[in-house]
Image (cartoon, rainbow, N blue to C red; front, side, top):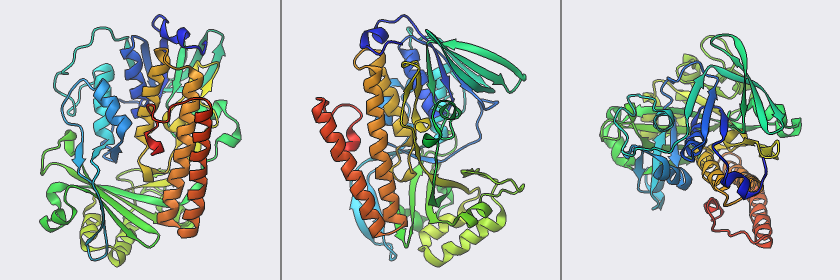
Length: 445
């Protein structure tokens, strides 16, 4: 694929394969089909129905911009928070920042994006869309397809797959392939050297869970309010905020409180807490409902020693906790096969979750790729910008983690690296005449 703007802007509808059907893949698929291209998403999960993964998501500017442009329903999808507050041990507000946040959950976004992509009906999106579209390309979502190989076949890319349902092999040809298969991306492993595949453990994990708003005492709800709440203790901190409830309800009394508790953890202890009720050792995430009772009991005992009463109440009311191991990874390249294969989302860069940019990065990649597909920028320029975004925000997330989980010396060293990268990018962009205020550069502030 020619990297000039005209090659993409005037092209007849392309046949596009998106590998991975989570939020990143769906955003790419929606954007491309709205441009009239024919999109086939290949998802290795055997079913479109996902267990309720009510992991909270704070939606940044790019997510909001994406939904403003592409959402076809118009109904509320997030719970607004009027600001951020830090509570001390006496539950007094230590710091308050007035900045409106949009908090939602993985399942709300997934089912909304699926409905927008291929019309999947669910309890989340049972109403008729508010927008009718006539110029969309074809949209196909296929489950149980694990991609085994991608081959540059000249003008197209051959995508080989294994059908996990029928146990047969097959091949699709595509003009453009989008690899959106997440942080453990098989596509990245196929096309990048070992030096790009490291995913080092940070030294800490996140204990996560949700609590129905209706089960929380009035005293705790009064202290927490509608804001994004932060409680910091020694080498540990907790965040709590409101998200939509069952089937995406944002009605008062039907919402959920999302809790994420960052705690340091040795590698020896990690092996224990990631071993589930069936004795299976997970690598990066212990799914909801699979934690051993004794593991959660130990964590609740630790909570009793350090947490103020409102946060302790929430921990004790979590019924299905899960654990995320905090790590990060970054690829050195985003465009391959002369621009016919692109890495996006967590497949390109996995950030530590402190800065809540995973879903925002997915939206940024999709919005920026639209500009390449319409001729405003080239694929080379797209790649430059997504890699700059990745480098800066990876260092930013490491710095935040050092502040909360390690100590001041580590934090100051991390800040030096982060600020140096910002300065380097500023000089490079000035030299090349790029506008810092351009779309996708809000993170530079």
